[in-house]
Length: 146
Image (cartoon, rainbow, N blue to C red; front, side, top):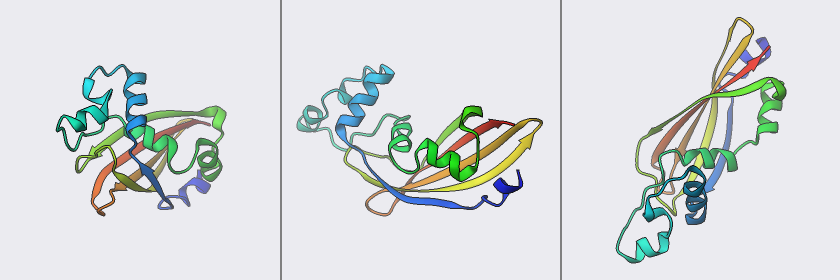
């Protein structure tokens, strides 16, 4: 626990992520979103739709493909990946994120707390778009059974 307490406040990044139309389509197919606007974004744009927002849980994709991968994060946090669970995820939207946006993320280890034989670590990622506007704050809670 002491080792992890010293990591509170450590920042990871910056890392970039381009909101690609193809990734949006893959995501909505995977989650079963039947909104037709996501299935042919080129056609939607041709029909006059502008600024098509991403699906609300799409930042899951961003966090999977940008920044540290799971193994790197476990090494940094000095956690046993076989005893870890992704416990909670929350997204706080500050502005609309659109297909085609180029985002930059910075993560910070916010807290580490122990309750009985469980260690809870909260990581926050702040995302800004290509116009340097903060668009999203993401918080992830990881739990390790000690």
